[in-house]
Length: 442
Image (tube, rainbow, N blue to C red):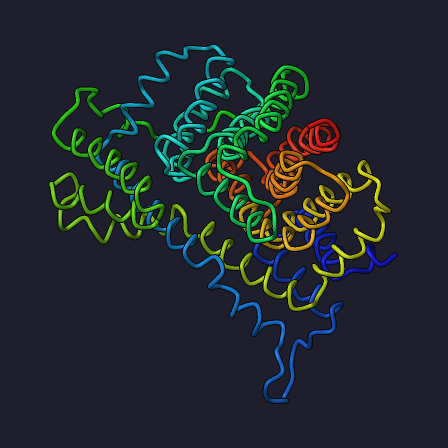
């Protein structure tokens, strides 16, 4: 009962129910945050000095994801700048010609592009609102179930960072390594890479099931005619501004590799385009406005998620949840692996970030894994799975917000039922099964 009445559990249940009822994700998070805070004994209003309130903790916690939010805005500006040069339209035209009417080629193409956005060209989800909307008419003609496309995009945003130590993958694995080291288990990036590949395989299996089984049947969408005259007028011949844009992309990759700062790398890419004339001086305001329009909502959701996490920590619910989980384990490895992954699922579903879940869980679960007898490799896998679980399926995660931003450009793709629920089924179930079983072996 302690787990069911825990403020975090109650809050996540409220968040999921409100989201399933199609309440806007921002409002759902705010309501869930207030409910969780009240259950945890935090006042919503007080005249006493020095006493924290729910809203005070919420706004104070914005700093937790402020860097991420800034990075998303700057990536939005960079993506808008790329779109302005016409390079995205050229790519869309070429892809459309290559793909023709082949569903699997289309799904494979967007999966590969999504993977590249996490590792090789780390623009994260900023490319989606630029690249995907022009393809919706083609998807409609194919009668492609967009839930399959959402799963492909989500796979590309999750599997690479779990398994490949480059770009966002290097950031995630560094967090895993550092938190394990800080809690008494010395591991390296190579150890994390070696331990996590089964999780990538599990996600691949989930993707194949979603594409070939769950969402393979044709699905009808309204043929909403969009004005494509601007895109049709774009020449496919590469010009000076396109080459500058390609150089800017390379700069983004280089800065990301050396500085490990997504906001800085996006800013450098924008500056290259401005300095070398791909973007005119009098267009800068339009690019900034376009970036905010493109990624502003997602950036703000990330800020709210940071505040939400702060409120949940202040209730003491996270520590109590972990302690209740430990009490339920009884030293059994199978139960321990199940509890660790379930608690990871609950926490990540609420705060919407796998990167932020690792430090929350590692403090108690790493020593516990050592005590129960899990190997370093099994501990790495359990911590990685616990963090990644819920990232797909969470209404507040960029893994789900990103695909929706592109697939719902014509208003025919529901965030919860067409992105969150399908990606939850496709990836969280295989990840949990894989982590629980493989942790007993390695």
